[in-house]
Length: 633
Ligand SMILES: Nc1ncnc2c1ncn2[C@@H]1O[C@H](COP(=O)(O)OP(=O)(O)OP(=O)(O)O)[C@@H](O)[C@H]1O
Image (cartoon, rainbow, N blue to C red; front, side, top):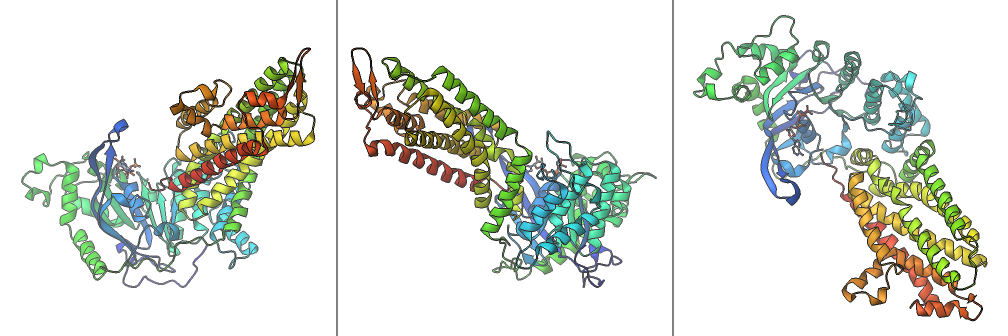
């Protein structure tokens, strides 16, 4: 697919201890020495810190171009090791040790210059395989160097290489839409990362959840890629023999420690030398896991017999100790010592700046375009929002149909209708809390892989939601409700009414966006959004007279979306109107004065300024929260 070149043997670095392996262009050598990784677990609600959990304990190794497998029982630390090497794990947990790529120190920017295929196949379900690959190619190849035709060809060649021709135009699938199969999904995930022709590819359990043939197919694909010069590092559970035979290098882990690291082909003889016997026809990978789990016992163990407290030591501990005493380990340590000599004082990095290859506006076009396609193919939310608004507009229109100017119903009905409208505008947008929760995993993966900037995602997501789900339904709602209720006939009054309702709605939506960007579960988001909305409603001026409230509580009216909205629509409707009964004439201004509402020009517009202020503050905070989302694993 890529990196075609003359066949060479990597100088001084036979692949995975196997001198017969030949590569076209050698990929980088990844070395890591004395990695100690631990986390401090919190003790529940009080956030008191608990005991330190040691996840990686003094792990060292060297992984060369070729197939580098990390194996071990569940919870042994395979994924953690992979993530630490790939720069995806929170660096705060790395208490000691370093990772070198081709002998140079790397930092977290490695995330942007290598490729990482996550276990869960994070793809946009409403797009086809080809569209997903095009999305990746558009954002990750520099448009100044690659024309549209080049990019199309790159996608076509990836589709051919991964054998995805038959499903290229099939959608990936969502929870409501049946899409491609698990194997095709996995190959598409790998393709998303191969787009940039990375020389170093990390994969977290690429065969988990796949049937054995599909798993075989994936490993054959990775094997082929490794022979074109890539360094492929992956964690894997318990592969069948045909898969295991493809490995060049094996790292075997147990309880965060290494029990073997070296040529995969020599692992069996290593354990045989320790006295473990693999029965005929037994799969070596099953055998290794049995050994580490203590289910296969040693018959004679020259290394271990020297330990006095052998009987009290658990099996994996003994294996880790024997590995440390082995010649393989000594060779690795010597080589690592050689590699790390003279590194002090100079963090070399990769010599590449981890930056985006595409401009802000280009990213906006591609990411925004995907959001629009996604909304068009998944229009349920937009339809529901529109239907809800039309339903409530007709309901309020029928309840308050053609409100007369005669007292007392003129005042009571108008105020009741306005309160109902404002409530509907604020609470009708609760669906906005799902905005950043729905695709959180997709955003984290794509953003940390360097697809696009956080600001691009934020803005395109906001616009893709605001226009179809908020603005359009409000315009329709306002037109139906306003004219059915028979409010002030002047067209400018209608426009101001629509503007006010739009700002009220946007203020509610932006608060929902802020909550959405701050939490990762719907349940939590619903609790967090309901609370301020209810408070704001109480301090809106309709349910309680704000002037008679306790002074230390009444300040809450200044942050009430309800109050600003209610005052603005009331001024808009009452100012300049005359209400009457048989005995009384009541100018709207007099009513406004009795309510303590400032109906001057500024008195009217200050409500809009305040609503715009709430929208701005909430949006800025939502963006900050999105930036603060924890990208580390
Ligand atoms: N951020 C973390 N916080 C707390 N514990 C963690 C964290 N990361 C890893 N662990 C713990 O470290 C241990 C190793 O986890 P890891 O995911 O690396 O194992 P694994 O070998 O990949 O397991 P599996 O095959 O089940 O995925 C587990 O006990 C896990 O719970």
